[in-house]
Each structure stands twice: as structure tokens, then as C-alpha cells.
Image (tube, one colour):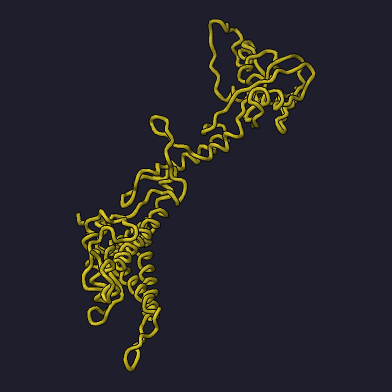
Length: 397
């Protein structure tokens, strides 16, 4: 039975020198199953009470007050550590399974997966991959009609009126490389022309072969393309607001194909949806609010961490005791009155908490990846400078 459950007396509001069992007396019960926390909480309460003047002076706190401060101190240490780890590992954990606990675990890997997923969006725009499906559509040209509304002709009937974005239109002449040996292309060459130009007019193309350098093909391909551009009505198109204007004006019915994607797919691709092997959705890390860092296990915290917790715990106890004593600035006694130090205790506690928080954050920053790599680089530089002063051996032959 704890002090606060005893019949009302003066000891009910003062530290009696011992505390009750911890399990069930902390506000949140986070560490009720942590054996080391259960063992150390009464010891920490006794230590704090003695630091606050017990038994020379009364300490107006009981076990539940001390246990609440001890739980808060451990929680605050865990919060600072977890917030630092979230900043360090956010790029690695973004998009991962939010149900996989990474508390006090080494997060290995690189942000390569994140970069690949980011590059997929650029791949979609460049037409070299990506994570959005491209669809194929077509429009049948009409003799003499140059403009076609792809929204009305395709999106409204094939995509139920969904917005589409045209990515590629297939409207061009056959490739120039296929017309190099075309006697009617003006810049192409028939087999006989090739043989005559190179001095092999007596050769028979059916039984004898001539190998020309590759630049010959490249130059003639370029010449054919320039000829089509300058001398002919070049195959081209204009696309504004999904209205396709074809050049030249069609002189016979044909079918022009195009590739497109749904604009809704682009919006949906910005949000990654993880699924398990059975296709069930997985809760994923989206921002700092659901990175899977949980309360630390007290028994796994090392000695420097516990030392910080005890000091912060003492500062919290001072703050609570100061608040209690500040409610009564003075206590009347026969023939005089006693002035309490509640305000001084609270001010001292606030300063200690601030100093401890600054110390912890600086320590965490020095242990981060950036600081460690920087220190390693400086160490390597200092080592090289030291080795430069080592005399080299002189070999005499």
C-alpha cells in the first residue's frame, strides 16, 4: 500500500523514506514490464529525496510524484534520441513499412530506393520509363480535314471523359535510312548509281557486294531528311489543348496513332501505396509523424544515457517540489513563520533542464553521420600531415 493510500496524516504528504512497488503507480505505465525500470525507480526516488534535503528537512512529495518524474525523464530522453534519429534516417525510411519498429536499431542502407522512385517521375516525362502507364489511341483522318479534337474523338468515348495528356504522336515519313537506295528519292541511290560512283560499274548487284564506310550512310540519311524538309511538304503536327493539327493536309484516309496518359494517374503516382505479398495495403512512412520509433527500453539505455536521465529526473523533482512549496509562501509557527523556497527551486530546476537539454542535443549532433564523416575526414588529413614528417629511407646501391 502506497503512502497516498494510508489514512490521512502528515506522512501522507511527505516522503517517508521508502516507496511502494512501481508497477501501476506511474501515470502511463509505459515501463511497467521493464524490470530494470521497476528496480531503479525506488532507488532514484530515494536518491532524489536525499538530494532535496531528506531526512534533514521534509520533502513534500510521495512515491507517485517521484515515479511520475522518473517516467517523464526517461520519456524525454527517448524523445530527444528518437527525434534526432528521425532527422538522420528520414530519407532512408520514407515510404518504408511503418509497422516495422526501428527503435534502438541500426538503420542500414542508402537513399537509393528513394532516388529511384523520384527518378521514375522524370522517366515518365522523358518517355523512358516511369511508373505511369501510357495508353495507345488513334484517329482516322478525313480527306481535306486538318484538325482533330482528341478529347471528343477519344477521351470522351474511350476514357469516359477523363482528362488525357498526349505524350507522343506517330505522324512522320518512313525513316530516311530505308530510302537511301531509292532511285526516286532524289538524294538516295540505286545500286547501279552506287557502283558507278565508286568505279565498279561492271559489277552485278545480284552476285557481287560492295561495302561502303558508315559515314556514307549517315551523310545520305541527312541529305534525304534535309530534302524532305526543304523541298517537300514536311510531315508534322501541332498539338494545342489536345487538338491535333496535321501537316500536310491529308489527301487520303489514314490512321494516325498517338500515346497518352491519364492526368489522374500522374496525381495518384505521387502517393506511394505499399502492399504485402497478398496485395493487402501496408501502412507506410509518410512523414515524421509516423516514423516507427517507439518508447525506448530503459534496460537497453547505456550508462551515459541513464546518467542524463537521473539528472533530468532530479530537475523535474525540484520543479514539482517548488510548485508545491510555492503555493504556500510562508507557514506560520508559534511566535514566527517559516518562508519556503518554492520560487528558487523552480528557477533552479528550469535552468538545469535547459542546460541538460542543450548538452544532450549537442552530444547527439556530434554523433550524427555528418559530424562523424567530417571528423573522419579531418583525422585522415591530420594523419597524412603526420606521415609527411616521417623520414624516407635512403637506399644506396
